Length: 456
Image: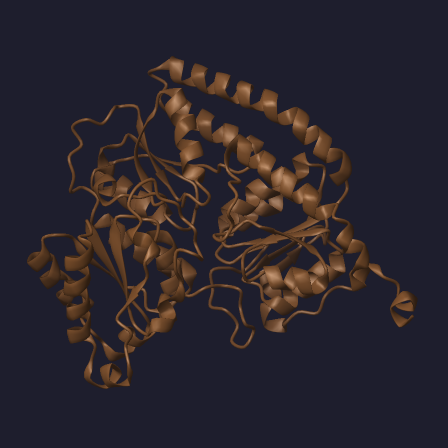
């Protein structure tokens, strides 16, 4: 089979497993100019991490266009306040670029805090603010003193790195809140959940699992998040981190300053969900009943789930899947989940994977799998066509690629409305994949119609 053409400058960011070459993949580098990367900017990275903190004010200091990134794009649900669903911007104009936007930012903060009475405010710096040099730090400090709430600058100028730098900016902003709250009522068997954004209510599923085990959840960071929970998160005994890129930096800061250990987990798929529960249970080995309850929980959930998965697997066995997601950690779980359904993952990639992430991907994937870092639409289209996949898993930017090629698509990103975490999430995922792959519509797309038929 002819291999897909690629930009020569990106050759070291693409690997085909099984070519008898040692595994080496370049990553975490600047995107190739002109290649229209799928990767998002620094501002976007910080926004997706902080946005689900529902009782905080989120003010974008910059052009109104940057503020289009709203709740509707990342549908993080809240069990209480929904201030995060509103999108505020200082709407910088040409005059502000020339004379500075500090006065406008001060007025906006004063008006918004008085009107909405938030528990904290995050002020996001955009590209233009980085260029004109507005002093966010000073303005936020003055507003904190004036209004009596934390007003925190987020140094997220879009041009100064990639999405991963935005994650770090968000973690630094959140860390300013940690350590400021009361921890007197926190159990020794307690955790913080980091890196879950409560899409379609997923964090509520995960919290119930931990509560059934007898473990207290102190803070959701950041799905269905609250400022007061962040303030006392330093009282938890363990930080359980799911999204490796988004909040691992915060966990490391808390480990360094407060000595809180870290467990990296995933809640996607059967194997990783069970492993997450067992890891937490084993951490609290002074109470063996926690592990016992975890085993009972997993046994009970699997007894319901497995018979249904076996039925769906009959139609999916041997079908091909491709994965391109933001963080590589999610890709690990997806590879295992597709394998459980009898499907072959023939391409997998991410926007922000690290060297360690890609080494693990290389270990768990099959021979012939394409592993790619920071890809672009042309490459992805070529890989999907070359491998003749039945379903492509990605986000909002990958969806049109799949549909234009006449390939099934599964949204596994911020925009989805169905819970895919936990045991019930695995069943939802399997049902969606089954519906998509077996849809009769694919018989009528150009890639499945012979040239002779098209000419008729």
